[in-house]
Length: 322
Length: 203
Image 1 (cartoon, rainbow over the protein chains, first blue to last red):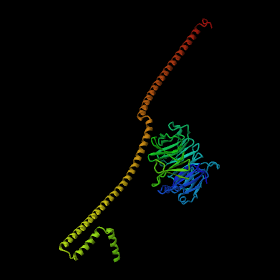
Image 2: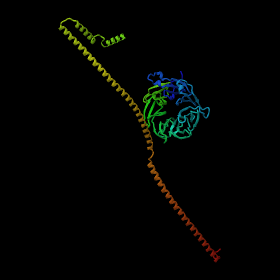
Image 3: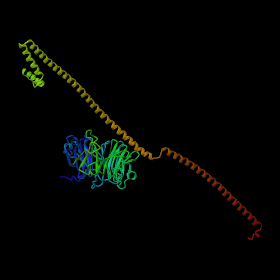
Image 4: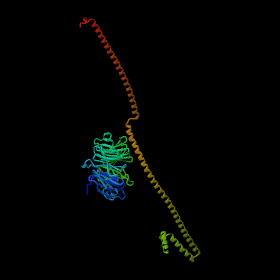
């Protein structure tokens, strides 16, 4: 019963602030909450790997999930919903609110692809199919500003805390850097114009973006590359096959997932250290449970109803499934 | 009260020597033979042999007791030994735990250092691609000198040009003046000639 597991894809994930639960969003618009503490306990059964809660959240796919210190935010087609984690743990699925930014035409329902928290001023930065980056003030619940500049979909956003900057990557192949206070675009990097990164056979769009104060990782059509932000120069290019869809810095390594059934581990110098096989044939999302000490796991999801859990980065320990 | 002590006594006796063989039996036999010896008529030699036999049994009992006492001592010391080993192992476990925690911290530190080193290397790679600052400065200096030289040359050429212009101007104006003067002279000469003999000129 319910949507077919065969065609299910996991698009997004987010760990609860306490670190004991994982929320995952799929292409059917459902969110499933898994109990990590149950799945990781020594007396876990096959049932512990199923969701403790599963509910419809949006009409379309759940493109992005993000947790604050007590809430879970989810994004779908043209809307953002907010859920209380403590209520979800008690299996209460009523959302706290759902907001829709004002688009140019009321017929526009663009998908919201990516969200990122700006902790400085408690605002949510998100971008999507209307080619713009929006900022929602979470304290007052109002949409503060719209950053215009991209000429095509915005695929990914990231916040550079220390410098009060927002980064966004889009279908137009540009990585734009915005001053979060003035809303002005301060830099625009067209990654595909750099010979070392360009992969014309894949295209120019940027599908993943993340930042670690002075450094930035971005990839998509062009190869995944590491950039030094102050000098705006690419320092390393990673020879990974296929398009990378999510990437993160972890300790002294870089983790990346995308096309291909593996999690890639890379070193900052450009070397691919390892590629750990996974269940899904292609991956969309990668999350690390850094807010927890006992459940410090890596989870990945993609074109499958299974979410692989890694307790040790070197091998897949087990899988959760919708 | 008496019943409890009896049970205790029976339990202890069963534990030590339940099957009736061994020391318990020996003591009972000794007691019986002592009473028999005290009450027996018999010859003094028989009495003496009996007495010696009983002493022998007594000695056996004493020996057995001595042995048991030594075993007890040994057990006590063995227990102490095990206690010591136990506490020793516990200490080792806690120190191993501490070492593991310390090593984990070390690993984090080392990873941080490695990350910094890699960032440094990545930046160094980019910096290497750009020309050395000394080189660029030298080139700039050379270009500056060249520029200065060229502007000096230009100035000189310009000055020369001016001078030549002026000289030509002077020359041309002098020529013109001379031409004018000559024309004037010729004219005035003609006029004079005309006045003297107009018929000769055929006007």
